View 1 (cartoon, rainbow, N blue to C red):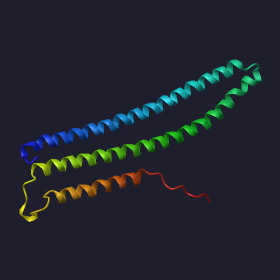
View 2: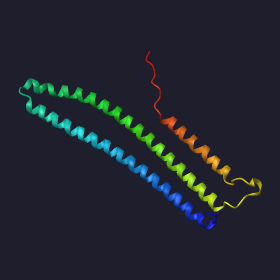
View 3: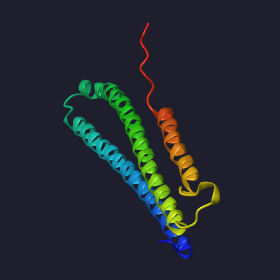
View 4: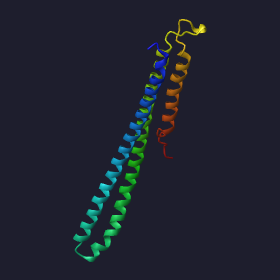
Length: 165
């Protein structure tokens, strides 16, 4: 590039790509949760239809009287499994979002560094003649992003199961 006047456009493009990447991650995450909610609604409708069919098929009063108790225990077991599934889906969605965000930030970081390096490729500060003047700045970012991501992933990873006494 070697033209400092192109730097604002290159930085603007890098920032727009970052915003687009984050917007896509948020959209994908929303779609994921929408599919999960749709699955739960479909299961609820099927369950309701099954209960109505059981009520219609109950031939005597004694069988009809036992339906609420049977239904309660079956639904209790099913919904405890649903909450475990929801927690698992939430964790995987969060990990997927964090990984995607890391990739988007790294791409933005590279685009930004390339824009600065291209704009000032010929400019050499006297203290770093022959080297990249942006290397210390880029190194700090390259060290900070993976460390922040690993800290975040460590914080949301499931804890090791504890043994029972």
